[in-house]
Image (cartoon, rainbow, N blue to C red; front, side, top):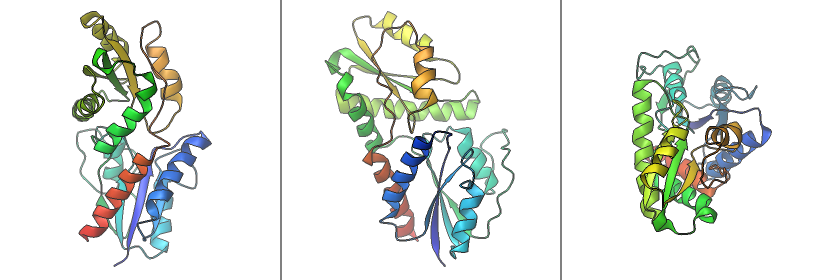
Length: 254
């Protein structure tokens, strides 16, 4: 038996997005001492999931830990990747990835969801925006999903992470919103009507800066009063620690 680890993230046309993910995976892999491959769901040609499977099996890997580097188990991508590895779907939504060619025994991991290190990461991102935490609400905004099962998973994770962040930073309240469905502006307006004396700090839950952090969130909230710096999760050592913990836990369990 030879273990190996396949990390899967979404992928982007932006080279810096890919570089930051690769950098985090490479740092975490240094302690794994087994073959590790950073692959992408789409866009990054030559580095797709099947490319990663093939590369690891060519190195003799017979026991494969698949680690989805995604924000939430509510991501439909996480489910469709699992389906392509032979796992049953979480809902009636069928993925379009087909079935991967894989000979190794596959162990499918979980995405980030709620995690203490991630809450600390988010707090460090918004520290420059916070003046008086006891008079501030943190509003987490994530991609989300319209599909019932996945929407509920997104909401559960956001609620847990929001409360963790609130306690950690000493904020008055937390709130959440998804881009899918389009909740951000309505939820922010409701916050400001309910608590007009509290400032709102918007916290994006995205792995790396890009279209959603730079364009979508500001456009959805145009004309509203809030604090925002668009800081994403990468680059930050907390992502490396999360990857390393998941890899180490799996290897130690073997």
